[in-house]
Image (cartoon, rainbow, N blue to C red; front, side, top):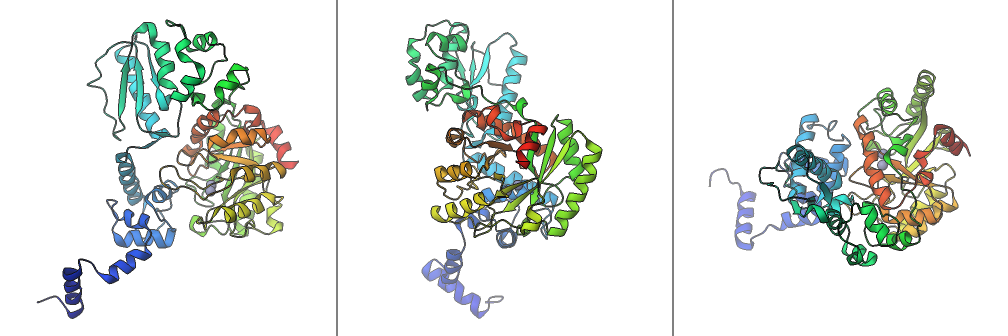
Length: 477
Ligand SMILES: [Zn+2]
Ligand SMILES: [Zn+2]
């Protein structure tokens, strides 16, 4: 047949006889499932997927989305800002269809719905309820409680197709229903909610009538919050306004979008007292990690800016890769010049628990390490993160006076809030870090605070709730 050579003819015969190609199967066997899945994303063909895999080490759709958020595709040959935006949109759509949503995406929709109800029915009592009100990191449905049967048919249809569930009740039992729909079943059993007298005027009154402290919605999971509330032992939870500065951020020096000046000015605009710049270290080649000469160049720029921006201060930080053997990424000579060091794992993520623990603990024990960055490397809804023994890691941080990051990026929220109580028990401070790669990313600290509250973090135990004077002292002690 014309156009079909001998080798192609053989392959066609093989495919017809066996229903598969040995050579293709061999190649598929060598390709991670996530990479094969990436082929289903609209807008990038096999050649580009191969490039993403080999050049950026992206091995799943979730990692690809994260790479878009870190602007990794802009510089890549054959890609660019437009392609990156398209890929991002395509992935977000794909993820949405899987029925699970990051809290931040759900919250945007939820806020719009509440605003719409308040405009159309200003006199009606309304509240978010369920998992979204508990600020869970993953949301499957937005629950809305309304104290009147209103017509919701013509309400905005969420663009990302997240389902919305309207619950209607009488005005008289709005608060009882709010309690019953916000909490998990476990929490309701523990508080004996059926004993609450009806027609209460507020949730505070209901908890009081049940003989306990008020329990914030975020805490109503059915863990140990009820026991603590009965003994009046729930501390005052941290609030977004308690934050005084932003540590761990990126600039154009590595893979950030904005300049040092732009990032600092944004922090000032947001009312912060200090900014920690933590660009990537030299081994992070995929993120344009800084060679020692670039570090020195950045130091010089910081010193000039710090004179201009007084009393605001930029701290000289670094996000040092934790190398495969647990060492940090520069010589002593450079390391000792940083005000603080965030130590994070970015490469060789496929480790067993023992290897991960050894690697992390070695980095924690390094006297230059100030904060352990995103302790598990997880990406919510897409990458599990390497297995670590949280207790051992937290104990090591306690022994070496190292704080732990709660990476506030809504895809990370790593350390998991469930481990915050153990950190507090061991007197390990939590740093709510935006890991901003663009100035708007500084606002992500809000999501960090949401997660931190679920873990009962207090202002006193949050590193970046310290004032400038306090944190200066902390970094030098
Ligand atoms: Zn990182
Ligand atoms: Zn970072």
